Image (cartoon, rainbow, N blue to C red; front, top):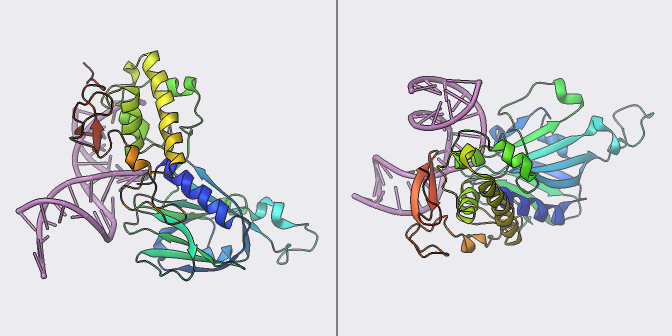
Length: 297
DNA sequence: AGTAAACTCCGGAAGC
DNA sequence: TGCTTCCGGAGTTTAC
C-alpha cells in the first residue's frame, strides 16, 4: 500500500517524466473520484505541469495557466505567476491506487478512472484505483476559496516524518496512546502507514502496544532515527510493492525484499532468529519480534 | 476530553 | 464453480 516512500517515488518519477509539459486532453471515466473546489477537470486542459511533489501521502501536481490572461482584461501581465490561477491536482492513492506516466499506446487496464494526454508527448498520465479508497482533488486556493467544496474532504497534511525534529516528535509522543496508533494517525504526522510503522518500531526495539507517553528519551531517539532510516532506505529502493503499488514508470518497488517484520510472520528475526509474530494493533495486522520488541508491563 | 473500537466504502485474494 | 471471509486508509460514529 502506498505510504511515504511509495508516494515520494511516484512524485519523483512523475516529475522526471512530465514536469513542464502541457495538458492536451483529459478523459474521466468515473465522476465520483473527483472532489474539491477547483471545478471540472477539463479546466486542466491547456495548463502546464509546473511542479510535482509529495505532501504526506499525497501527490501534489501544480498546474499553471499559460494563456496570457485572454479571458480577462489585457491589463494583467502573465497570469502564470498570478495566484488567481493557482490550481493544484492532488492525488491520494488510498490502498490500491496507481498514478503512472506510460506510453499512450499501452492498453488501458481495468479501473483506470482518469487519463491525461500531453502536448507533444507520447506519454499519458493515468490514475487507476480498483478499490477506490483513493481519489483526486482539484484545489483552487485563491479565487475558489469561497466556492462550494464537492465530495470528500482532502485529508489534512501535518509534520513530515523525514523532516520532523526530534523535539517535535518527543512532544507529539507525550500522549497515553498506543505508539503504533499514534504513528499511523495522519493528523500529527503525515506519511507513515502499516508497513513502515512495523519496520520502524522493530528497528527501534519498541513494542507497538507501548503507550507513547511511557517511552523514555532513548527510545524516542531510537524511534526518530529508525523512522528516518527506514523511510530513506525505502525511497532509495523505489518503495515496497506488496500488492498493487507501482512506480510512475509502472514497475514494482524493491523494498519489500528488505522488510524485517512486515509480511514475515513465522520467519526468523534478522537480528535474533526468534520467529516473527503477527498480532492485531489498532485493528491492523501488526508484525513484531517478541524478543527484540518486549511487550510493555 | 482523550482514547479505543466498530462501522463505512470497495474489489481482489484466499479458503472452503 | 461458486460461495464466504478477510484485508485495509481514513472518515465517522459510538462507547468507554
